[in-house]
Picture 1 (cartoon, helix red, strand yellow):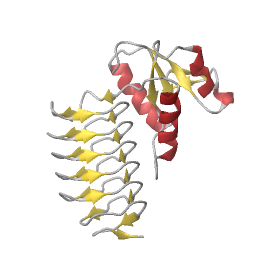
Picture 2 (tube, rainbow, N blue to C red):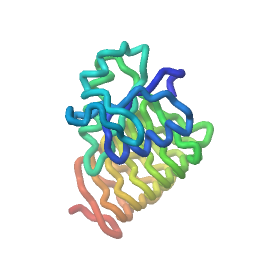
Picture 3 (tube, helix red, strand yellow):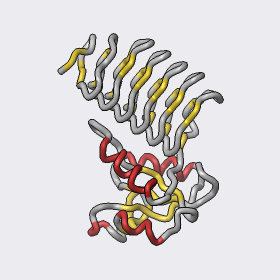
Length: 212
């Protein structure tokens, strides 16, 4: 987390609700939720009130609050990146969130706005880029480099020495063997077993994973 500033959540879907539960475990003050649907204003999500759309954040100076990116990603994480870059351009900071049950070795380096969810494991020598999600139960073994805006979905296993470029989506339960390079904007299908390098903006699936 960044200091003890109160938190504003961006987004009100399933990923945001999971983050709210984690923040409550830290007794972190949550001001409210930003939601694109203005009919939601005044309603509550996971016990937290929707206070407005993205423009509402301008009521708070950048040094008064810290933001949490509550958007998940199903395929390419473009929208999640856009939200992050928009608010960073306006001077706001994003908190990194690590669930209490996650295991993160001391020498792991974590960028801004990273979210490490329940039961995830990050081993020695890993580097996690800004705004990445290491989701529930995912394993990232030693010396991996994970780019900005990457989503490693629940139950995925990334073996040692893997390099993953920006805005890659690793599907639920996928496995990547050691030393593989996955280039930017690639999508790895759920349950895929990746045994060779993956080119940029390529979709692969299956065991062994092949381009689709």
